[in-house]
Image (cartoon, rainbow, N blue to C red):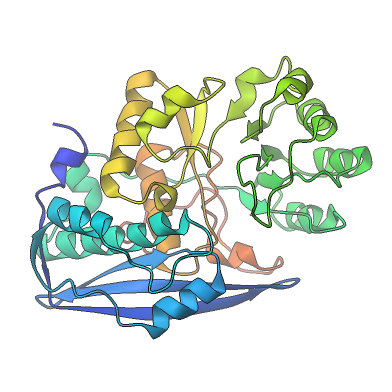
Length: 348
């Protein structure tokens, strides 16, 4: 029985849908807005989080009436219906946001169905939760300031980092990071053309990053004749994230990765997610979890999945407090297992 077969026929009763706005000002100048999807039925509630990045898309969603999903479903029937629906009252600024929103509903449906069944996800899938290793994920701003990482490295010396590299990095910036922090993943963001986070494909940057961080994974390079030369000898450290929307996408990558970044909200559906995990196992690949600046239950849900599928990895699943500057009282890595007694939620 496949992983998805274990949940596809899960019965779900939905009596109401409501939306909740979450908002957090993240220094120096980022106001993050997400939407919690609440599905309610038979005295239970299930939650998921829409991580759509454009605040205007979130505003329009929260101001509109949520879709009417009342009725009796199986998880697969509801997923099929969601896949055919337009969940955006106005077209999204960024097309991948459609999967982000769909995942919020699928996660909420899974949570609700499991609670109605009186079961936790881990027991239904037959996988025991494990402590979750995590990294701190951050960019350096513009102009790049390595102190944004080094202050965290001093406050949390046992935790590694996932950093976003940009063409404005100098050799001095890279060396400051390499000398002062444990950098586990460098995100080259080579697959976001036309978006505000598109850094292009800079062979100088790629070569410098590969040289200065010889033990780090190199995520999402944009490969062309020049960048392939820049990354010569480091091909075994290339990982993929943004291009992975289904298990079959592994066959389309220009370099076969030994490890990949799995983001549930990027895949959109539970069937696609569990299909990718199945393929990763079959191919003997490694994996780590990816975050999308979740502010609420979505963060716990990616921690839950990491605990089941890739606990000993540089998971971008740090608690929400790590979105802010260093402060006291934050949990360290690894996170102790915290699955709720029933459902698909993680309790800190």
